[in-house]
Length: 215
Ligand code: 3PG
Image (cartoon, rainbow, N blue to C red; front, side, top):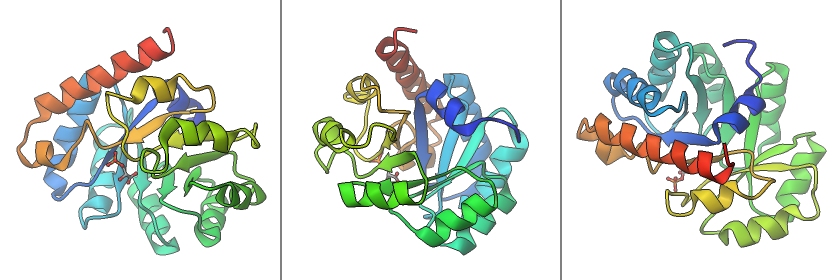
């Protein structure tokens, strides 16, 4: 997994489940549920204490799952994410310090942007794949199309308010590398131990991706 081309793999998978785990014990069943659903990828957010051990648990138990760290806000979290085995870093906004550290450590980093100024900052930092966040609240696909027009070399990962209802239209836009979201790995489902439903929602997302891309 160390040598995986992360952008290429994310493009191929098309969908990144974003999860906040309250208990590390949920990590392995979550990994199993995602694998069963056909989506060997997960972004675990640094919004809970369980994030770091959960990244470690999934990385160690399932080398075939591409594990990233999300909601990374500072350099200390980057170091913890790397030590736990994260293979990519996602942040809600742009941070030069975090981007610099990720680059130094050879780790793909996807900062959040939602304005042309944000995109220009990221381009100056030599980044070409950016999280579009919060996608739906910021005007959805219409805004993304307008935002991407002046930046033909940038690809986006729309995140925030994506669901089975709008995934297909986002994925049909050529500048979308992948979509990320929590809809198939909701905290309530994890708390209830309803991993069968997570697998079902994951399968549904994969089917939508296949349709959107005529696979
Ligand atoms: C994130 O952290 O990237 C978002 O919270 C995911 O957004 P969603 O919960 O609306 O899918």
